[in-house]
Image (cartoon, rainbow, N blue to C red; front, top):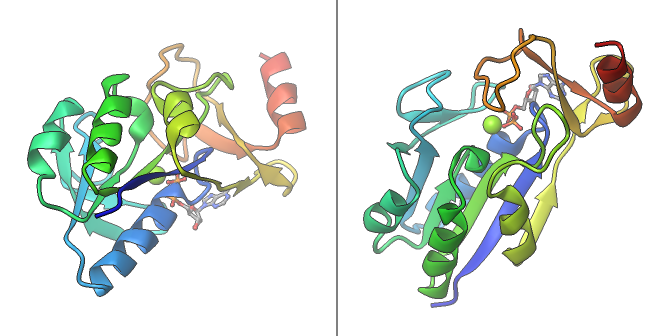
Length: 182
Ligand code: ADP
Ligand code: MG
């Protein structure tokens, strides 16, 4: 069996989860064995499901650390991982091992944090994946294509869960404008 890694990245509201669910649903239609994981810290909409902003959902297993995925994914044809940025760097190794052993791995995650910095294990995953898809949101200020997640709230933690109220999708000029005004 041939394995490989696919990454779906972009800002918040760019449709990463939507695209992940689309790919996994199609694999299921093809009668492949599919397992889906998300970091246990991400309980925004549902404890178990992976849920997109347009309310599409798929059953998933929350895991505390990336290595749990190796144990739980044994025997699956396709492994989906959402919110990849919240895992530690060992996620890269876990994905490599799965792919080396013949699994198709699809990771969705934020490529940048709220300051525009590469986020967690995502840059290393982007470098080592066979396929990379960058999806885009719509800038809430001007309607152009958005690749930044602008944070309204004042918190300075890299991880701040919460949604429409604390973050907005912005294009580069509108993101910079917001950062300068702070
Ligand atoms: P992600 O996982 O990248 O955060 P989702 O797949 O959860 O994205 O959600 C994408 C959906 O978010 C879109 O289909 C749309 O319904 C909704 N949405 C809300 N705000 C925006 C925005 N500014 N740009 C694009 N889509 C948005
Ligand atoms: Mg998502």
